Image (tube, rainbow, N blue to C red; front, side, top):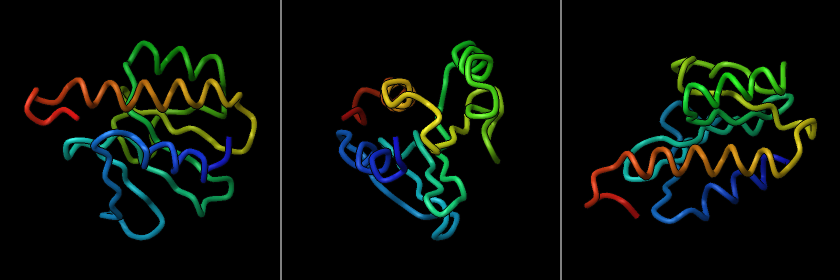
Length: 114
């Protein structure tokens, strides 16, 4: 899966917003004001950092060493950085994206949920 597809997926989520609080090289996607993804589209290779349940995060790191690593500039327990160089199956990347979005959206107070 390429970074443009990931960014399009993030933009399409209900209640999603896109910001660049860290500068143009890091595009942050939020739901209800909370981050669920940070894309680095200009990286070589491009990457996305995603929120993750700690046990699932460890599982993914073990299953995809080098492609899924502890979150860059993020809480290493709750965030993974995923390399988008085509080395991961697209369905796995979609599962990680969906997990991140759902984890964050469900943590919001009911009044702020999309």
